[in-house]
Length: 274
Image 1: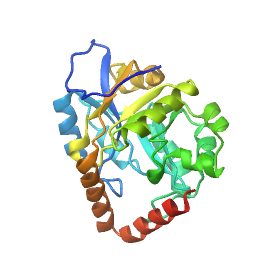
Image 2 (image 1 turned 180 degrees about the vertical axis):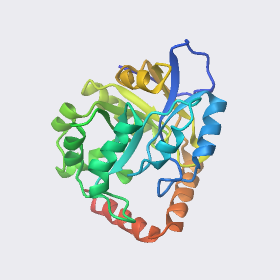
Image 3 (image 1 turned 180 degrees about the horizontal axis):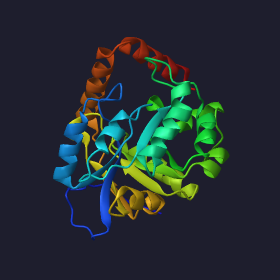
Image 4 (image 1 turned 90 degrees about the vertical axis):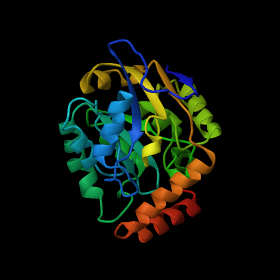
């Protein structure tokens, strides 16, 4: 079980030669609400000696592009927005496996301009179990932005199903509150699930504010050790900075084609509290 420290990671840090700090939840501008170019993500990660899991919403181009270089460790990943609004994080060993999953599961259920796919979280997880991937529930108690606890309350998915089929719980999310993160940590401990952490960075100042220490010098080694992270460290951005980040995200989303329609549908889902 990963140890959680609510403190600034102060990157770069001195680690053992086979250890790496990784921000396991960041977004590029290939996400409809992302603002950071892949080039800028990589430049920032190099300065911090930080690995990245670029998990764009229903999209893999950012992860694929970032993997074309070798000096920053990239963990192939995607954040899937299900039809009821619940988010699910998926990590893969190789970009080829990520691409195969995307082509097989996401593409057939993705509609142009939509912020969700046509699968409920249980349906997505059942399909994902047939692939070589690790399934994580991000920000589970942040109900307004895809936390799975809303779906559990609504009966869309059972906690017992999560206990049996989900590998990891996100223990620290940089966009959550301390109370929400503490609830996630307690929930992970109750279910005896390992934890990882990510900034949920959509703007550049978030990158590296949250990270997990894992064993491995490359993508495949780290993938094999994701469930054995020794510790996660980070601070929520909180207060005015959180509000500013949310505003920047939403303004960026609105600027995209069909962005206003997407944001309106997102608000409707939140009102329904599914």
